[in-house]
Image (cartoon, rainbow, N blue to C red; front, top):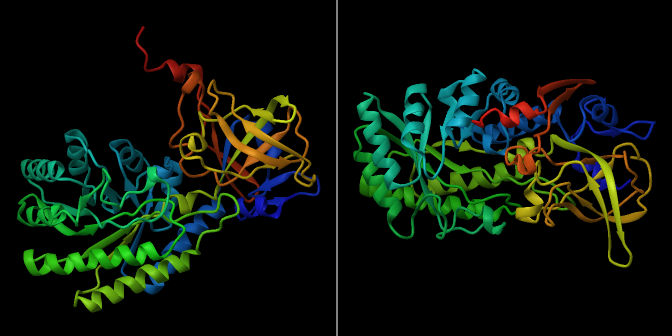
Length: 437
């Protein structure tokens, strides 16, 4: 067994004497038999451990820190309750994510609402439900929210999202802090300054501070320091020219996780760079230290999740490639198809067996691009084997679809040898429920 594969699994992962993969004290092969595949398994110990790492590492360096879980990575009521218990807030990007938080009894004053095109109905709900902060992304939204808040007789706390023009050197589809991005208002063009000035004058808004986000996943530390420097220089100018009282500052998230061999910085390293840059920048510009708001998503939930599949058909092309198909694919994990994302894998029922053949793991969907893992060396695979793909907790499920009229997989939460179903498998009735015929 390749050591790197087990290292990428949840922190409770081990191999039993039987040669089976164990997660959270539960035999992965037995989980696949009991709940069927595809199946997503979340390890509660890893989830809580990552929450505590972010709260602890940032809190020790800057006590005025608030960690928000970026719900777009994946959220459901059971996970929301865990984040609530660990003292986190939530970063949401839609009315649907707000509704999940509300259904879970999450304190909505700890919810920050993001998005580049929030609609009037979504903003009305945010006002009605008492969402803590709305992160204003553009002039249209600024004016719309101001009007809606005044009509509701409220003053809504907001952050203005700015774009610092810093490249974090990640995938082009997940880079958000550069000039050519749909998100935020550019500091370089002067639009960010206009937004601050307008937000300061808006009667229905209370400008609490600034937000920016560089992209994801970010394996380098320097972009965080660079972005902080640019935004603090801007904040100082806005204080002088427009009276900005920056009580909060959010550098967003983007913290990386290990998918294959490239390990990210430790949470403490991210915290050290960000907090040091905050302190140095505030000292340099004579700014009071603001409340620091962090938004990890992938970094909290990524390693905690494992996808289990059952091996089916096999296609050997002599001298070219061997395809081994599984019963999931781009319907539950589209990341390899759209981002070129790479994953490790382990044969859960042969975890002690030596790698012996190079194969490509193909999904079951009718697309040539439905390849989960290209050219990986594994023990000989046979129909009925259970394949475990680690680091599957982030974005796989939140981007899942019913392509090919497939059914979205169930999710179990494991802890101390117990498995609890937190989302059942969809049925054909679910698939047809919204259709009118």
